[in-house]
Length: 333
Image (cartoon, rainbow, N blue to C red; front, top):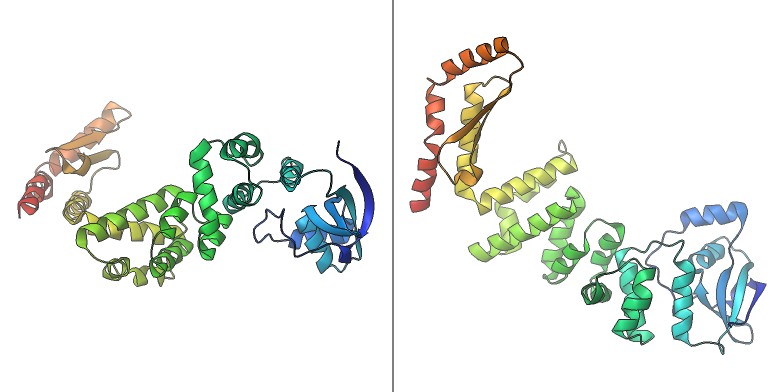
């Protein structure tokens, strides 16, 4: 059984620079400071008694930092003896104590797993069995490898990963790029705020294009005039993201995009009834078009059919059936 005592400890006796058990990453303590200034510290921190009433923090790093900023002189604490257990066991006390209250971001999970493996010498099985349930991970060796790698990521990647701006998958890909390319992509993501799925599509599309065209990321982005999108103050972040992805798509599939734009122009010129739609096959893989209409009654159907009978004789309608031929012609060239 662990010996412990509850006391009020002077803040200057706590070693604030000792981060042995610290698992946080650039935590914002402003709201905590407000709470402590109003109600004081309700939950005591847990400290390790090293020698002559000098203490190492096991849990409560944020509360102690907030108390320091508020210039408090002392703080309620539970004191444990450094002779009772190993550092490895005290690290588990930290995680188990925080488990009911703490939701770790990906960077903090990486810090925990890196410390568990490198500093406290947990083996892989111990980490997966004992630590994973406390930090909401479950995917065995796969999660262990990719979260431990976070410790080696560039600082700006960690910041955006911790804030949720980029996904763990995105961070892993960007970390392998040259620094200037990483910075460029991060600027795009900070501006456009793409969803997780769009981040994946953007990175995959860029990778496909630069490999095919043997160009750099910077050259590609210059070619599609990224700057004009970023500088457009009339567009929202989501609109900028859509525009950017459309330009990448056009660069990757120029023939298909040419056909798609032609199809849209022809449909617009036909001035179809609101309850009628015309679509082509996916990627124009098969000839012909699909015409759909939604009708509520016989009278409405006659009205729509009369309108369609006029449309059928328009040149624009006839041209819809030539797009596949144009597409095949471009491919052959």
